[in-house]
Image (cartoon, rainbow, N blue to C red):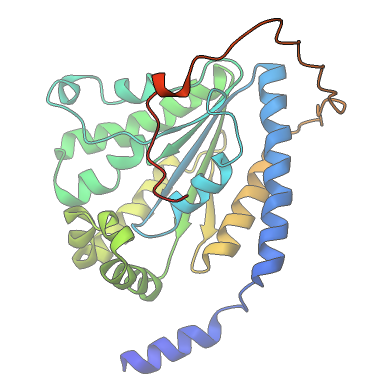
Amino acid sequence: MDKKRAESAAKSKPAKIAKRVYEKELFRLQLELVKLQEWIKHKGLKVVVIFEGRDAAGKGGVIKRIAQHLNPRICRIAALPAPTEREKTQWYFQRYTAQLPAAGEMVLFDRSWYNRAGVEQVMGFCTDEEYEEFMRSCPEFERMLVRSGIILIKYWFSVSDDEQERRFQSRLIEPHKRWKLSPMDLESRTRWVEYSKAKDVMFAHTDIKQAPWYVVKSDIKKHARLNCIAHLLSMIPYEDLTPKPIELPERNESRGYVRPPLSDQTFVPDIYP
Protein backbone atom coordinates (compact mmCIF):
# COMPACT_ATOMS: atom_id res chain seq x y z
CA MET A 1 0.00 0.00 0.00
CA ASP A 2 2.78 2.41 0.90
CA LYS A 3 4.55 1.61 -2.37
CA LYS A 4 1.41 2.36 -4.37
CA ARG A 5 0.90 5.61 -2.49
CA ALA A 6 4.51 6.65 -3.16
CA GLU A 7 4.14 5.82 -6.85
CA SER A 8 0.90 7.77 -7.04
CA ALA A 9 2.50 10.79 -5.34
CA ALA A 10 5.47 10.66 -7.71
CA LYS A 11 3.16 10.68 -10.73
CA SER A 12 1.18 13.64 -9.42
CA LYS A 13 4.29 15.79 -8.92
CA PRO A 14 5.10 18.33 -11.64
CA ALA A 15 8.34 17.90 -13.55
CA LYS A 16 11.30 19.26 -11.59
CA ILE A 17 12.98 22.33 -13.05
CA ALA A 18 16.30 21.66 -14.78
CA LYS A 19 19.36 22.49 -12.67
CA ARG A 20 20.77 24.92 -15.25
CA VAL A 21 17.48 26.76 -15.56
CA TYR A 22 17.05 26.85 -11.78
CA GLU A 23 20.51 28.28 -11.13
CA LYS A 24 20.08 30.92 -13.84
CA GLU A 25 16.70 32.00 -12.52
CA LEU A 26 17.88 31.94 -8.88
CA PHE A 27 20.80 34.21 -9.76
CA ARG A 28 18.44 36.62 -11.54
CA LEU A 29 16.10 36.74 -8.55
CA GLN A 30 18.99 37.19 -6.12
CA LEU A 31 20.17 40.16 -8.17
CA GLU A 32 16.69 41.64 -7.81
CA LEU A 33 16.92 41.05 -4.06
CA VAL A 34 20.07 43.18 -4.00
CA LYS A 35 18.12 45.95 -5.75
CA LEU A 36 15.30 45.55 -3.22
CA GLN A 37 17.83 45.75 -0.39
CA GLU A 38 19.15 49.05 -1.67
CA TRP A 39 15.62 50.38 -2.01
CA ILE A 40 14.79 49.37 1.56
CA LYS A 41 17.88 51.19 2.76
CA HIS A 42 17.22 54.25 0.57
CA LYS A 43 13.57 54.66 1.59
CA GLY A 44 14.05 53.65 5.22
CA LEU A 45 11.55 50.80 4.98
CA LYS A 46 10.99 48.33 7.83
CA VAL A 47 10.32 44.82 6.54
CA VAL A 48 9.48 41.66 8.49
CA VAL A 49 9.21 38.33 6.68
CA ILE A 50 7.96 35.33 8.68
CA PHE A 51 8.72 31.76 7.61
CA GLU A 52 6.63 29.04 9.21
CA GLY A 53 5.71 25.48 8.33
CA ARG A 54 6.29 21.88 9.23
CA ASP A 55 9.72 20.48 10.06
CA ALA A 56 11.75 19.77 6.90
CA ALA A 57 9.41 21.91 4.80
CA GLY A 58 12.32 23.86 3.32
CA LYS A 59 12.10 27.15 5.20
CA GLY A 60 15.82 27.28 5.97
CA GLY A 61 16.80 26.70 2.36
CA VAL A 62 14.70 29.62 1.16
CA ILE A 63 15.99 31.93 3.89
CA LYS A 64 19.57 30.97 3.02
CA ARG A 65 19.06 31.82 -0.67
CA ILE A 66 17.36 35.12 0.14
CA ALA A 67 20.16 36.30 2.43
CA GLN A 68 23.03 34.78 0.45
CA HIS A 69 24.15 37.94 -1.38
CA LEU A 70 22.63 40.58 0.88
CA ASN A 71 24.32 42.86 3.39
CA PRO A 72 23.80 41.36 6.88
CA ARG A 73 23.63 44.89 8.29
CA ILE A 74 20.47 45.45 6.24
CA CYS A 75 19.01 41.95 5.97
CA ARG A 76 19.40 39.78 9.06
CA ILE A 77 18.00 36.44 10.15
CA ALA A 78 16.22 36.03 13.49
CA ALA A 79 16.24 32.40 14.62
CA LEU A 80 15.54 32.48 18.34
CA PRO A 81 16.35 29.54 20.63
CA ALA A 82 13.96 28.22 23.25
CA PRO A 83 13.05 30.94 25.78
CA THR A 84 15.05 31.21 28.98
CA GLU A 85 13.41 30.96 32.38
CA ARG A 86 13.46 34.76 32.59
CA GLU A 87 11.95 35.17 29.13
CA LYS A 88 9.13 32.81 30.05
CA THR A 89 7.99 35.39 32.62
CA GLN A 90 7.92 38.23 30.06
CA TRP A 91 5.03 39.37 27.91
CA TYR A 92 4.94 36.68 25.25
CA PHE A 93 5.78 38.95 22.30
CA GLN A 94 8.54 40.80 24.19
CA ARG A 95 11.55 38.82 22.99
CA TYR A 96 10.31 39.01 19.40
CA THR A 97 9.78 42.77 19.42
CA ALA A 98 13.48 43.15 20.26
CA GLN A 99 14.24 41.61 16.86
CA LEU A 100 12.04 43.97 14.85
CA PRO A 101 13.75 46.15 12.23
CA ALA A 102 14.71 49.78 12.41
CA ALA A 103 14.39 51.99 9.34
CA GLY A 104 16.30 50.58 6.38
CA GLU A 105 16.28 46.98 7.63
CA MET A 106 14.67 43.67 6.71
CA VAL A 107 14.38 40.82 9.23
CA LEU A 108 13.76 37.22 8.19
CA PHE A 109 12.15 35.25 11.04
CA ASP A 110 13.08 31.56 10.88
CA ARG A 111 10.06 30.68 12.98
CA SER A 112 8.48 33.40 15.03
CA TRP A 113 5.83 34.20 17.64
CA TYR A 114 3.74 31.52 15.93
CA ASN A 115 5.60 28.92 17.99
CA ARG A 116 2.81 29.36 20.52
CA ALA A 117 0.15 28.40 17.98
CA GLY A 118 2.12 25.36 16.83
CA VAL A 119 4.75 23.48 18.77
CA GLU A 120 3.93 25.01 22.16
CA GLN A 121 0.25 24.16 21.89
CA VAL A 122 0.73 20.67 20.42
CA MET A 123 3.52 19.68 22.81
CA GLY A 124 1.87 21.20 25.89
CA PHE A 125 4.55 23.85 26.51
CA CYS A 126 1.92 26.48 27.22
CA THR A 127 -1.35 26.47 29.11
CA ASP A 128 -4.76 26.60 27.46
CA GLU A 129 -5.18 30.13 28.81
CA GLU A 130 -1.86 31.25 27.29
CA TYR A 131 -2.79 29.68 23.96
CA GLU A 132 -6.22 31.33 23.89
CA GLU A 133 -4.72 34.68 24.83
CA PHE A 134 -2.25 34.36 21.96
CA MET A 135 -5.07 33.75 19.49
CA ARG A 136 -6.82 36.88 20.74
CA SER A 137 -3.69 39.05 20.89
CA CYS A 138 -1.79 38.00 17.77
CA PRO A 139 -4.07 39.64 15.17
CA GLU A 140 -4.08 42.89 17.13
CA PHE A 141 -0.32 42.72 17.63
CA GLU A 142 0.22 42.33 13.90
CA ARG A 143 -2.23 45.09 13.03
CA MET A 144 -0.28 47.32 15.42
CA LEU A 145 2.97 46.44 13.63
CA VAL A 146 1.44 47.28 10.26
CA ARG A 147 0.02 50.58 11.56
CA SER A 148 3.49 51.48 12.84
CA GLY A 149 4.80 51.28 9.27
CA ILE A 150 6.25 47.75 9.25
CA ILE A 151 5.73 45.72 6.08
CA LEU A 152 4.73 42.29 7.41
CA ILE A 153 4.80 39.28 5.09
CA LYS A 154 3.97 35.76 6.33
CA TYR A 155 4.79 32.51 4.53
CA TRP A 156 3.60 29.01 5.40
CA PHE A 157 5.57 26.19 3.78
CA SER A 158 3.31 23.25 3.01
CA VAL A 159 4.91 19.81 2.59
CA SER A 160 3.18 16.46 2.18
CA ASP A 161 3.64 13.75 4.78
CA ASP A 162 5.34 11.47 2.24
CA GLU A 163 7.87 14.15 1.27
CA GLN A 164 8.54 15.11 4.87
CA GLU A 165 9.21 11.46 5.69
CA ARG A 166 11.63 11.20 2.77
CA ARG A 167 13.54 14.26 3.99
CA PHE A 168 13.69 12.91 7.53
CA GLN A 169 15.13 9.65 6.22
CA SER A 170 17.78 11.52 4.22
CA ARG A 171 18.86 13.33 7.38
CA LEU A 172 19.56 10.00 9.02
CA ILE A 173 21.89 9.06 6.18
CA GLU A 174 23.73 12.33 5.56
CA PRO A 175 26.01 13.24 8.52
CA HIS A 176 26.07 16.98 7.74
CA LYS A 177 22.27 17.12 8.00
CA ARG A 178 21.85 15.00 11.12
CA TRP A 179 21.93 18.03 13.42
CA LYS A 180 18.59 19.06 11.86
CA LEU A 181 16.84 16.12 13.54
CA SER A 182 16.09 17.44 17.01
CA PRO A 183 14.10 15.47 19.59
CA MET A 184 11.21 17.84 18.82
CA ASP A 185 11.38 16.93 15.12
CA LEU A 186 11.24 13.24 15.95
CA GLU A 187 8.26 13.78 18.23
CA SER A 188 6.42 15.72 15.52
CA ARG A 189 6.39 12.60 13.32
CA THR A 190 3.89 11.01 15.68
CA ARG A 191 1.69 14.11 15.86
CA TRP A 192 1.00 14.89 12.20
CA VAL A 193 -2.76 15.23 12.71
CA GLU A 194 -2.37 17.41 15.81
CA TYR A 195 -0.07 19.80 13.95
CA SER A 196 -2.51 19.90 11.01
CA LYS A 197 -5.38 20.83 13.32
CA ALA A 198 -3.25 23.47 15.07
CA LYS A 199 -2.32 25.01 11.71
CA ASP A 200 -5.97 25.16 10.63
CA VAL A 201 -7.00 26.92 13.85
CA MET A 202 -4.04 29.30 13.55
CA PHE A 203 -5.03 30.26 10.02
CA ALA A 204 -8.64 30.80 11.05
CA HIS A 205 -7.54 33.34 13.69
CA THR A 206 -4.50 35.02 12.11
CA ASP A 207 -5.08 35.07 8.34
CA ILE A 208 -6.05 38.73 8.54
CA LYS A 209 -6.48 41.30 5.80
CA GLN A 210 -3.58 43.46 7.05
CA ALA A 211 -1.18 40.46 7.21
CA PRO A 212 -2.48 37.43 5.31
CA TRP A 213 -0.79 34.05 5.13
CA TYR A 214 0.82 33.06 1.82
CA VAL A 215 1.13 29.31 1.36
CA VAL A 216 4.21 27.99 -0.46
CA LYS A 217 3.93 24.49 -1.91
CA SER A 218 7.30 23.01 -0.98
CA ASP A 219 7.34 19.36 -2.05
CA ILE A 220 9.89 20.41 -4.70
CA LYS A 221 12.45 22.58 -2.95
CA LYS A 222 13.77 24.38 -6.03
CA HIS A 223 10.29 25.40 -7.11
CA ALA A 224 9.48 26.59 -3.59
CA ARG A 225 12.60 28.75 -3.45
CA LEU A 226 11.97 30.44 -6.77
CA ASN A 227 8.25 30.91 -6.15
CA CYS A 228 8.78 32.37 -2.69
CA ILE A 229 11.53 34.78 -3.71
CA ALA A 230 9.57 35.94 -6.76
CA HIS A 231 6.51 36.55 -4.59
CA LEU A 232 8.53 38.44 -1.98
CA LEU A 233 9.89 40.73 -4.68
CA SER A 234 6.36 41.39 -5.91
CA MET A 235 5.20 42.46 -2.45
CA ILE A 236 7.39 45.56 -2.19
CA PRO A 237 7.48 48.00 -5.13
CA TYR A 238 11.09 49.06 -5.65
CA GLU A 239 13.29 50.89 -8.10
CA ASP A 240 16.71 49.97 -9.43
CA LEU A 241 19.28 52.07 -7.61
CA THR A 242 22.28 50.23 -9.03
CA PRO A 243 25.16 52.76 -9.13
CA LYS A 244 27.06 53.49 -12.28
CA PRO A 245 30.17 51.38 -12.97
CA ILE A 246 32.92 52.20 -10.49
CA GLU A 247 36.45 53.10 -11.47
CA LEU A 248 39.10 52.16 -8.92
CA PRO A 249 41.52 54.97 -8.06
CA GLU A 250 45.25 54.41 -8.44
CA ARG A 251 47.05 53.15 -5.36
CA ASN A 252 49.46 55.48 -3.61
CA GLU A 253 53.15 54.87 -4.02
CA SER A 254 54.89 53.18 -1.11
CA ARG A 255 57.08 56.20 -0.35
CA GLY A 256 59.66 54.26 1.57
CA TYR A 257 57.27 51.89 3.34
CA VAL A 258 59.01 48.62 4.24
CA ARG A 259 56.92 45.61 5.26
CA PRO A 260 57.99 43.81 8.43
CA PRO A 261 59.70 40.45 7.92
CA LEU A 262 57.35 37.50 7.38
CA SER A 263 59.08 35.67 10.23
CA ASP A 264 57.44 38.12 12.66
CA GLN A 265 53.95 36.89 11.68
CA THR A 266 52.04 33.72 12.50
CA PHE A 267 50.52 32.05 9.44
CA VAL A 268 47.80 29.46 9.04
CA PRO A 269 49.49 26.17 7.99
CA ASP A 270 49.29 25.36 4.27
CA ILE A 271 47.36 22.12 4.60
CA TYR A 272 46.09 22.62 1.06
CA PRO A 273 49.05 24.10 -0.81
